[in-house]
Length: 185
View 1: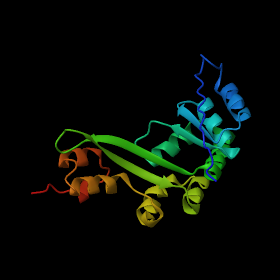
View 2: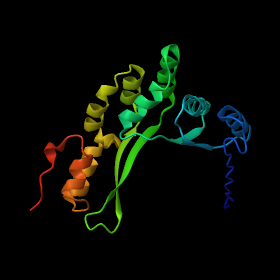
View 3: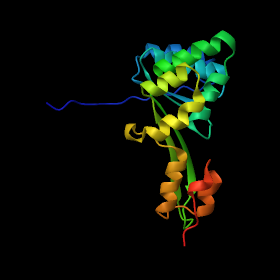
View 4: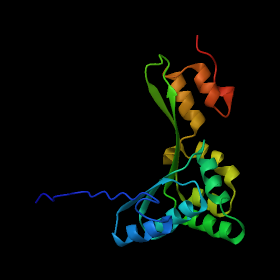
């Protein structure tokens, strides 16, 4: 028997449809959603709301302006202070599924854009690093966990450059460690 699958999307705009993020979350959770998308998480209320929704078992997708997965985690934690920060670290360690940092770069021929990205699926090692607030160790774990699907931005940039999809100048302007990049003949 073929099941009939339908998706319903309900969008709420802050200050137009609802007065606050908390009210929007309460309303959304009453609808029993499978996925909750939070626009840009730029303040305490938006981040706290997203974490609360994730803790209830919902898949929460959110955006945040950050150049790397490590910076994204630092921004989420840094919005909070004192004991609230400790609580957020635990919430994040327990509920995070993954982070993607991405940037669209001009292609070598300048006719299109190429996606450069950093990918951090949350595994036990990542959760422990977050829980212990040892974020400086993320790059090491990402470098050694490629088999788990982790990708460092520098590795992605190097791949795009070595495949002649982006220029040397573009690659080194976005790379954290430029030692790997040598101009191609």
